[in-house]
Image (cartoon, rainbow, N blue to C red; front, side, top):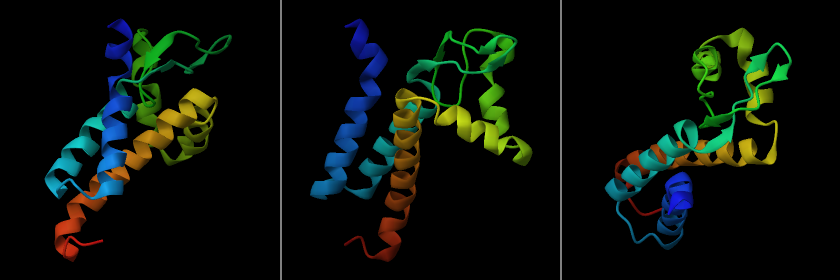
Length: 128
């Protein structure tokens, strides 16, 4: 049961992908699944913190691709990098530093893209 609490977002993401492939879900359902999946990947998936520290990257357990660990200085460090153009290169390196962070980052990007597509779907007739 403990593992389910950590990885529930992968199940939601799988349902989202199946919904897009089968076209059985409406735009509202796809939008909700996309939002929940985006939240999971960007703010909840278990990953190493990776924030810049004195002795290299932090190795504590963090939560989400854009969040840090329990340390106050690390908590919002990656999220703040989104808004500073000079930090985008460093953010890119941190989001693609290992297989786990690559999967979480790509899952978040795909979920956000899915949400945008589900929002635009009714505007273009709904039949893709």
